[in-house]
Length: 385
Image 1 (cartoon, rainbow, N blue to C red):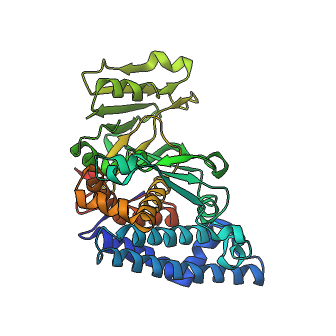
Image 2: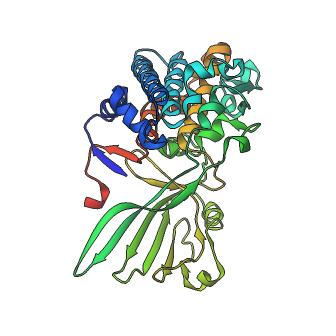
């Protein structure tokens, strides 16, 4: 992972993203994934894809910048097209030569969005609570741009923890990879219908807003730490806190899974209302099975666990959310404006979502392009505290 200290997250993110607008850097990145070009034709394809990546990033930056010059009435449309350009850049870097634009344009099925939007609400209800978001759904289709770029995403991501290694008389602390999260392949999500309100419930940067608006999102804050002794023995510790209810905490605890012999080595304190600690000790070179709920991190590395995960990358979730909001703004302007003008809970959440997508979308795209988890903040890394 990489921790970046910056006074301006948006500006630094785009500075890093536009490094891939350099053809040599993009070609090197493509080569590192797919191997050096073995012939002239492959080399030409690499350079063609690098040129296409450049156009996507230049357009994406313009879309996101211009979103700051328009109001919430039209902002979702601009942000969605910015996300589309970022997704295309990721597809061109991670995908093979068959994912280049000229290849995809040969198939008419690939030209559509790949998503279908629906909303079931009367106009008079759009200004009430969160009804507009509750009644809005996005269905994943088998063909189109979305399943095409989704199919190029890695099906796993790094599980990070604050790791302390005992080295002689001293210790070294850092955030490191300690495991792997797995995502669903594209064929497993086709036909699924995702509600816009549900999508916001598993975005870590929106948790505070959801709670402030009186929406009971199930979650727990988590601090995951690992201590590795000199002999290789390790202790894993998950400190869970800030859960809205004890029932939600128990629901999340049920998703911790350990193989039989490990049960005796797991210490879980009795839930004290809304917090507890799970501790697991492993012997050196242990091959015992263990799994736990996935952890999603905010841009500045605050960890959250959510029960019943969707099984998709966070970039995917905010892309689908951006699409749904843009469809409301474009094709249901009467419902959209009624909601926004009412200043209801849905309107508040829409505003928070737009801000989150604008900041988080490019950072997540950068992580996918670099194949390294990227975090940014104006302060030092938390392991230096």
